[in-house]
Length: 332
Image 1 (spheres, rainbow, N blue to C red):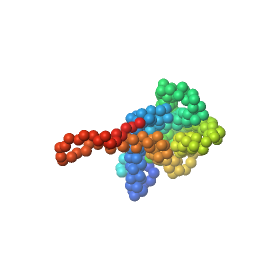
Image 2: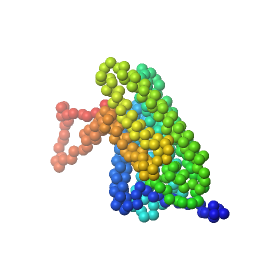
Image 3: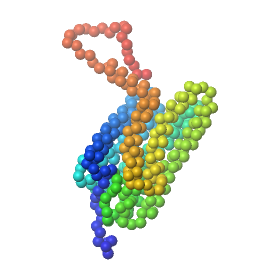
Image 4: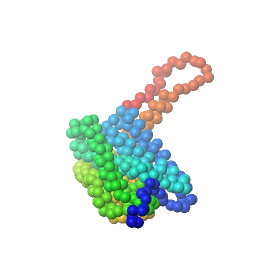
């Protein structure tokens, strides 16, 4: 009878990372700076890939998709967290929580698949360069990217359905700063074994399966690089793969700790979630920009072209004849 008298939850209370006002202010500044860098960095990378012809290759096509996923991934979480850090009543409606959960899983799972596809792209480019242009055509790349987004939609729908189909009639306090499946399931008023099993199986599909492909790809790449006779060839191969491998370690490492390991301490779980949901989307464009010669060259060329095309104003009206020695900057 007591179970029947309890009302269904219509909103959740997000407890956040801390209840200390000074710590919350510090976290607000940190999250705001990180989010601004995330938005600017990913938008810059997307615009470079779309506008610079030298970056119209499969590798940067997938990188553009990755930056898009990162941008929306962070936007799904951080603005709500910033609002709650300044608000006394840190609530989110049940529908709002469901939407955040669905979008968070969609973009996060899509990123997992994209990282696996990017590792396969690097495998073909280094281990089978002769057939690379024949295999990685524009149509194939489009289908692969579409498959990544479709897998993200599928996993997010399954996880969200199994999480939200449970009754929530008691405690509405989520011990987290956003709506994440493990934190929400802790509040369910029924047995959560089936939901945890479904989420674990989806984790195998979207985390361990792509990670296996990544490990196989980089194992083959390492064997190919070791057999290279020239040091310059080895350095070029390592520089090409180093950025991607670093992103894989950061994202998959934190994701596996959150979803594929036994339950850890609440504070540790929140810190791990903060790392892969807030910090990693900011680091990805920085890593690819700072360690990638093509991106840095494209950025320099765009900056030079923009500077050279700026009009020069003069207070005198003179007829200007171009000098034969003038330099014409051109993006190549």
